Length: 337
Image (cartoon, rainbow, N blue to C red; front, side, top):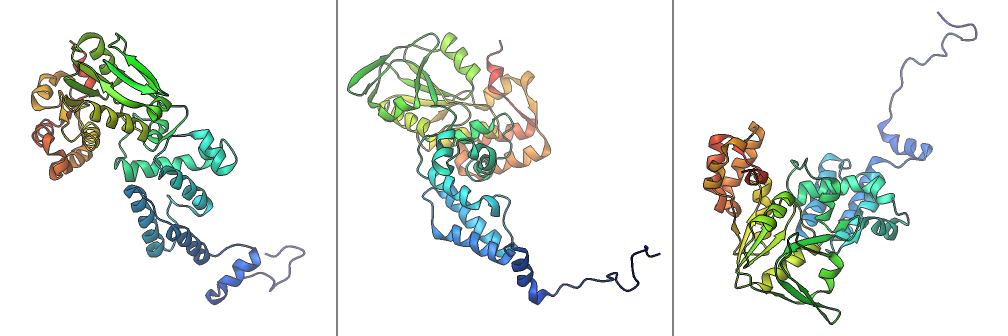
């Protein structure tokens, strides 16, 4: 039934799209066509390259995605493509950047990065740099530290006899009960670092284990360094300086007995080739059966992939046992008596 003011024959029965004139439709509506948008994205991606391999891989993957899917990737959306590219070029320089200062420099707004770009960068870091989506215990701020983006200057912790020169002045640190602290600005200015009385250097991932170790277990001839779950370019530079200063010492690292712990070890070994695991073997694993955590089938698949990678060869026997027991182990188990 037609309304009072409606006439028969005035209602549209069908609408046909003229594919040959789609571009005209975009022009009339003041919108940019998908083809043009894709071309613009490719121009952005192809105009420059990156020095860091993971960034370069991301760039190449985005190009392939656009060319094969004929649309933008969720990691390089039309709306923020140019802004993302700006931040990636800052990251590529491997320098420390305070989050809001970076945002102000790039966008003229101290909160723009956090509101609009941060979540894209975090997802990229997880996929391309850390190669892991299983990082629930880490905040976005933790993950951003991996590429040198922090809310405040980073604090680095260690315990042992260590000295260096900064601005021409000699700085001396001794083994303190609660450890010592320096910030990232100190690392940048640090010169002529020396490690005194240390035959062993131990890096520890977990904060609780670090505190327990320096208070209750540290020997007189040890330097203990808090690693944390992630390390930034600045912290990496500090680790490099420690390695160069302590060539005569034996270097060890202690992490959770799980995938992420193995990855942390392998990454630190890129700086310290002689690095050995501490309490990350079959014996230590079997001693703490009461504290084992069960694995999912998906986790088992990911863990088994490490058996095919020479980078994790030092853990292959341990991984075999973990798969057999279908369990993993957190560091905190070693604090419990």
